[in-house]
Image 1 (cartoon, rainbow, N blue to C red):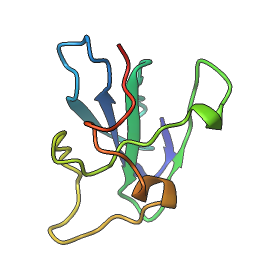
Image 2: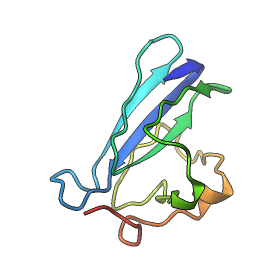
Image 3: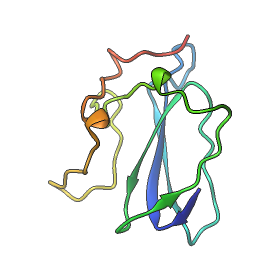
Image 4: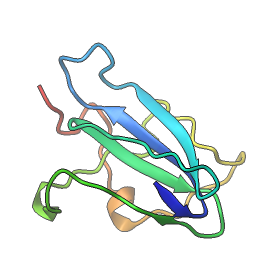
Length: 110
């Protein structure tokens, strides 16, 4: 959930056996609306900060294990996430996010 600011929170289904494999869902979350988004196992998760800055509070099912982290390409046309960007606007990405893999090459789940 967002405790300061506003984000567009996105999840992508990476479970090959799922009827929604490769599909995404996105929700606006902000400090003004006390809602949160649950991202189940088998989904990629990312968000775009829409305010000048934001603080996001996470709850997880296990300890962070960076050796198991994978990165899906944020703008893979096969997925078609409609990020809330202005035309021509490019997001500020971490190096890890710049190196994300398209869905066709990404490690997925059964």
